[in-house]
Image: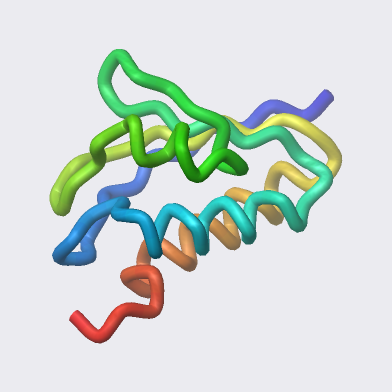
Length: 91
């Protein structure tokens, strides 16, 4: 099984709020991969909106992405692109 790890900093003003968490969860669900997001001592499945909100991730915080499965590389690429695009938000 392919296991990958990446780190990225949240750069949108509101952080990983409900709309951003929903976009991330929908995106993560499109891949044949199990993606876990870690911030500090907390971890959550990238496909769980509630889990992502429980991370309480704000602007400037660095998260670790762990990917496992056939599409892990593509899933992490897509999630990183979404974060870098500030979840397609205006600010």
